[in-house]
Every structure is written in C-alpha cells, then in structure tokens.
Image: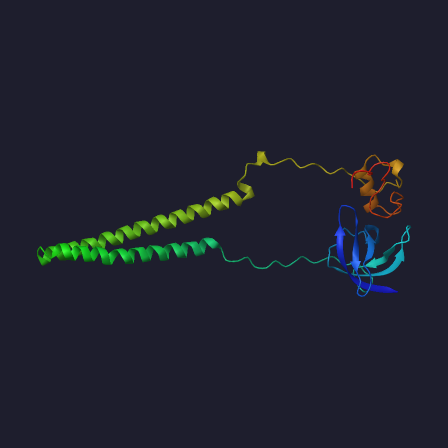
Length: 229
C-alpha cells in the first residue's frame, strides 16, 4: 500500500531523515531509498512510498518516489521575493528635505536681522543688503546640498566596493580544494575502503554496498567512522 507524506527532516551528513505521515508516527527514510538522480532531498517536499522494515526491524520507507505516478522529478528553483527599495534613495530624500528645512529656517532670521540694522540707514542700502543676504543664503544652501549629495554618493560607492567580490584581489582568494575523483568500481565492503569519507561516498552513491548493517547512514563504524559522527 502506497502512502503520501512530506519529508519532515533530513540529515545530509548522515544520509537519512523522517517522513511525516498523517495520523501515524514519522517514518524513517534512508538516502538509498531515493532515486540516484543527483537531486538532494529537501525538507517539506511531498513523497510517495511504501512502508517496510530494515534489518533492525524498524519501519522505513521503501520504493519511494517524488510523484504520485512513481517517476522522479527535478525540484524547481525557489522564487525569490523582490528586494525592498534601497535605503540609500530614502536617505538622499531625507537629506534633501533636511537641507530645505534648514535653509527655510535661516532665511527669515537673516532677513529680520537685516531689517533691524537697516532701519538706521537709507532704504536703498537696506534693500541692497537684503538682496545680498538672500543670494548668500541661496549659495550656502546650494553648497550644503551639493556636499550632502556627494557624501551620500561616496558612502554608496564605498558600500558597493565592500560587498562586490570582484573588487577583492584575486590573489587573496583561498585556493579551492579539489574533490577526489571517485566512481562505483565494484567495491562494496569496509575492508575495501581507505577512509571514512570514501566509505560514506560509496554508501551514498553506489548500489549494493554492505557497509551499513544498522541502516543508520553511517558506514564502517568499527573500521573507519566509529568516532566521527
């Protein structure tokens, strides 16, 4: 009898997990039950399977597939939500608003001071000073606005330089450790392995291996992987 459930959890290092089944206890599933199609198990994906027993008598999933019809399918790429608007644009708008408010607050005070001083002099001189004060205020506002824009642009450029991997010198990148070339060459037992990593690779990728008697996903526990997991 085939059952439908969802992969509840998955231990990629040890190669096993558990399937949530409605109204029943979780079902153990080993990496060997999945099709060897290069698609890693993902928690939450739907699975169809039958329930059997392993060598230790535990319930486990057998004849597993990723579709109800029994054919394995590739998992689609996850859709990413759109990124929120950049904070720098909002920062520029806020900076411009502050500059306008500062300029607006300064102009009435400057005009008021000029009016008080100019009451003792001729009207022509007072008018000229007021015009000069306005031009000076506009010039200071323009300079201040330019400085704010340049500062924001410089900060944005600095942040991009820090987060751009291409800006880092190539000689500082750590050399990649080459993966050893392995293939299913007919070795099936622990005494034919040379390391725990090699035994784990054969268990996960090659059919018919005899290195995991208790089906817990850890091969050669006495010879190679006894204290590693």
